[in-house]
Amino acid sequence: MPEGHSVHRIARQFALHFVGHPVAVFSPQGRFAAGAARLDGSTMTGAKAVGKQMFLEFDNGLWLRVHLGMYGAWDFAGDITADATMASANGRIGHTNQSGTILDAAGEDSLHSIGAPRRTRLRMSEQEKLQPDIETFPPEPVGQVRVRLLTEVSCADLRGPTACEVIDALAVAQTIAKLGPDPLVDDPEDAEERFVAAVRKRATPIGQLLMDQSVASGIGNVYRAELLYRARLDPHTPGKKVPEDVARALWQDWAHLLDIGVHTGQMMTMDDLDDDAYRKALAHRDDRHWVYHREGLPCRVCGTNISMELAAGRKLYWCANCQA
Image 1 (tube, rainbow, N blue to C red):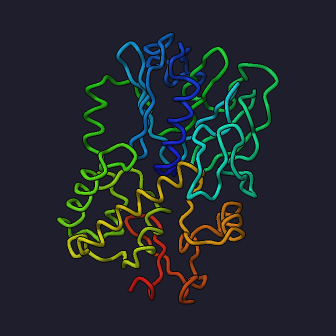
Image 2 (cartoon, rainbow, N blue to C red; image 1 turned 180 degrees about the vertical axis):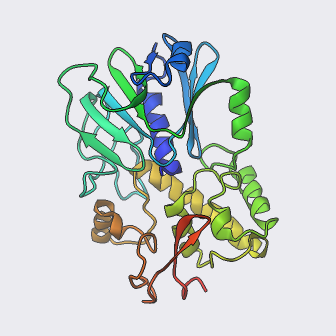
């Protein structure tokens, strides 16, 4: 499932290439025909993400709300940049919008040396994958496309979302009000206070609270495991027993990791790496996490085998020694 950094990156792609332009909206598969008709021909005026949800605003007072869920993805095609969010991450990358980022060895995540907009195709979901350049525009829809957004030079196809609906501004506000704070959206001090209060009033284990989108927006399975390890916090600790300073540090670390994720396109959760190790981590997902997806492998710090268990139906990875 795409986590918060991915959705923010997708929203920024829309902000760069669609906001300010009239958009043709239709449903190639037909399942969203009625909703598409309400937006067709309107100008997109805004694009924003809150946690795992994205909201596209149009000049007729309507919004398109999208939650990608487990299987959703956006395919962008046309005269687009491969990375609409370029900036340095901890000063280690230092590329610009016009030069791209480092390519994952599996062809995923942030992209390398793409340059200025060109007629290309980019899939954005949990990972980002550059597809072969297109020869004609717009390209033919591929697969079950729920909705296509089309300008004169760019298009975006949505597949497999959990939610895709047209709503008004009141419904947008009501939806966002149910979500926990997002470090990239909310006032930093207010967001931290909301998070700490939500955690410390609950008896639910912190490992489950971090996945609760009403507690914090955007944290998924990868960030949950890594945040808890970085805090050396037992995932089974009831929220109300998490010390206040630890809860605040968790929030601040989430803001830190989310910022890195948005700017690199990768869930980079290991700090203080030398240049060679950092490049290796950018190139391979297996080298950029402390505990996630490392069940049975030795902890990078203490050597204890990493544990995995199911918590509320999701895999939880942790080190029973470092996080005791």
